[in-house]
Length: 133
Image (cartoon, rainbow, N blue to C red; front, side, top):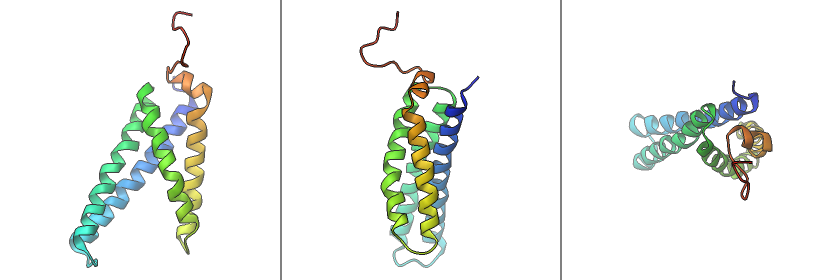
C-alpha cells in the first residue's frame, strides 16, 4: 500500500507536469494556427514546455511506483517552480491567483518530499547508514 504522502506529492507533481504540457500545446497551436508576433518563437516555446513537462510527469510516475530516483526530479521541479510562482504573484490580474495556486502546490510538494517518512518510504537511506542494520 502506498503512503498517502507519496500519492499526494505524485499528484501535485503530475499536476505541474500537466500544466506545463497544456501550456506548451497551447503555445504550439497558437504558433502554428494563430497570429503571434514570432511564430517560430511561439512554436519553440511550446515544444520546450512540452519537453519540460516530461520531467515532472516521469517523476510523478516514479513516485507512485515508489522509485527512489523519482525524488530528485520532483525536488528540482519544485525548486524551479518557486521563482515562477514568485513572478506570477508580482504580476497583474489573473496571474496572481495562478501564482497563489502554484506557490501552494510547490510548497506542499517540497514539504512532503523532504519529510523523513517520505524519504524512508521511497527506500532512500541516509548517508553513512549501514543497510544491514
